[in-house]
Amino acid sequence: MSLKSVSAKIFSKIVALRIQKWAKNPVETQQKVFEKLITEAKNTAFGKDHDFKNITSFEDFAAKVPIRDYEELKPYVDRVVSGEENILWPGKPLYFAKTSGTTSGAKYIPLTKESMPHHIEAARNAILCYINETGNADFVDGKMIFLQGSPEMQEKNGIKLGRLSGIVAHYVPAYLQKNRLPSWETNCIEDWETKVDAIVEETKNEDMTVISGIPSWVQMYFERLQQNTGKKVGDLFKNFNLFIYGGVNYEPYRAKFENLIGRKVDSIELFPASEGFFAFQDSQKEKGMLLLLNSGIFYEFVEASSFFDENPKRLTIGEVETGVNYVMIISTNAGLWAYNLGDTVQFTSTKPYRVIVSGRIKHFISAFGEHVIGKEVEEAMNKAISKFNFSITEFTVAPEITPSEEKLPYHEWLIEFENAPDDLQKVAEFLDAEMQRQNSYYFDLIEGKVLQPLKISSLKKDSFQEFMKSEGKLGGQNKVPRLSNDRKIADALLQIQPQN
Image (cartoon, rainbow, N blue to C red; front, side, top):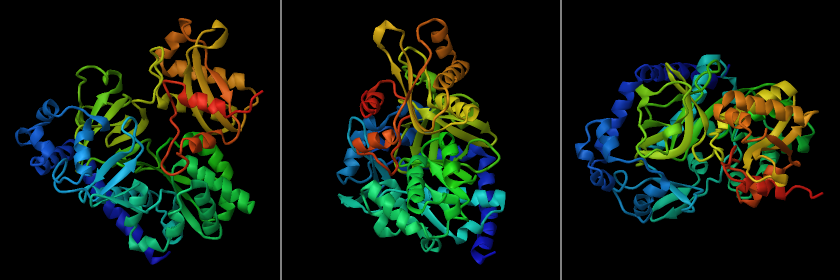
């Protein structure tokens, strides 16, 4: 055992104890974060506009600071982008993380000297919790790869601008730099397919022990490795035993990954975003990710079912329950205030507080009042994969409101199979039964003959890659939405299928 792995084990115990300390006092921990945020920002433009100096409780805050999404916060962000100081947070941000926007085009998410360390610390602590629980630390001596965006940055009014994953690349600790791949030059390649091919060349002869990235793009890397070498990933990298991922649910990809690797490997799930690093999987034995209550972020939760009401009830950490679908609202030391991130979560535990990401408040299907969410379709798909022994590359679900021949509308499941099942109709029937079991609204619509049972459309190989490429979103942190309440994605996917 190397000195580095011994040191990692010792440090992991220290970090685990620190985490336990605040995790056992969640309400008190969040109250301290809340008070510090309000105090620090009371003299900013936003703080003055919302009377922070007279906020002494969460109730005051909720009364004075409405929930906003990016579009509604944009007037303040635009002032920061133009170079003004003390607008959302004291001084100027260190960086802007540039992400894809909706109606506003590009989004500029501020990262401050107070918020940036938490992004780095959370990723590190996720690995240390794994080491502390499992005792596995040998991987620290091998090579590690993080599939991410380019670390090259631009500048806007004296503030550096780039993708979050590229910004984070500048903070890799010195003791990991010699273990880290790909090279700086390869990481700077903008075209994703060219970049993946270059990464394959750089890594295929190395002792890779940790691989990290969004599952769909890591899958592409694995496929290119296999094409290039003719070997399973696990045979090529004999000491590869840890996969770290975030952004999407890994379960639909698991069977495909294990086939590409040739064996099972441990995995750690992360919940990072440009707006903050919110949670990580702290245990291989428990479901969900530990919500980071001590990282400069104050959390609120609104039940998804009432989110679009005029005055939905805003809950703090001590008021949430397990199994309820909540929209997560954040206030941060990067200057986001009562900010609607757009993600929905469910708590799997309240001792400590662990969450799963259940979907996006804008990514749902309720064309007929069914309120179907991402967690439900993913759970149905995972059970179908297990029962019928098939594997998939990707899938998405959309409503078909006006089918031909005057038939009832239905939900269309567009699936790119890696290994297709023998009987698609049986799979469709099983998925429909699972959806009815999970979602009472969907059950009522099927029973009441408002909807007909779901239908599966099988897509040709690489359909999702072609779609993402056509949208300019191939690779990096980009993800295909699991659900849409319209047919934009579904129709684009069907458009690239071979015509009969």
